[in-house]
Image (cartoon, rainbow over all chains, first blue to last red; front, side, top):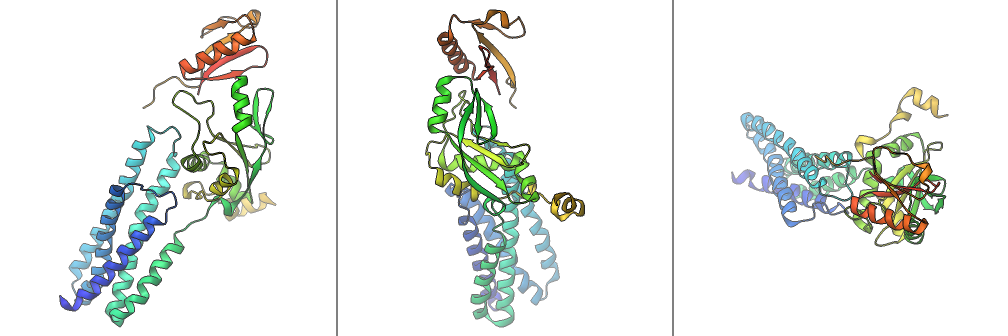
Length: 296
Length: 64
């Protein structure tokens, strides 16, 4: 036991630190509450233990133990269900919903992060076993850095150009540049929108990006992130100032309209740029032969 | 599950009596533009809808 103590400890430590850093890397700070974080740190500890114990189990050799480890890893599938259910329940009482695509993305990330922790723990304890505990101090940080880099994904800022749009009215139609957002009836609401409304244009760089921005799920995610930081003036039963993202049907770019509590256009543009591109809505037309042909 | 009415015209407010015929929803008559705006604002707040303007003297309150 003493022989493997340091190896297992190194693996668990690396895995737990990795999980902690992955929790903090989320700029929206989800999950926000201590209890939510504790749940994930506890699961991270279990995942790290699994990864750390695997190498000593093989070295011993105890193949039955390894088989059980593989079975235990299956448990992390439940993490995805757990996150999905929680977020879906919360969705019902939200003024501005996240959208199912975003929830699915978040749930998947939470599951995947546990596998990353297992991998980090496995690599670190493997290194400690093979080349001594000192090497764990190199392999551990390197694999943590690697997971942080690999799982960062792409952002709206990478696939689209975000710039200011002019909020104005054509008759009763609210427009941002040349994109129709909605029909607004009351003169006082129009006045409020002209005075306080913010508009941005999100221009996709290529056909993949255009398909991505087309997806309602992606648009909801953008709106949700913006509202969760800048706030909105929507209230229960007063939905006239609802933030919206609509498409210029001919040219394929998006216009986002919002009346925010904190009307800072520069920050709005920065927030939109930092919205993650959702896996489930990612456009892949340029990967196909016909898509490439149609694009030129 | 949300079972409330949505995408539905809840009320029509107008002072152009000859432009609106009876239908599935109540029609509120107003004597001038000011009253029309006030009635539609109140109705929108009460019903939880949004006021839309048909640009021919007819306002409607719609639930989305």
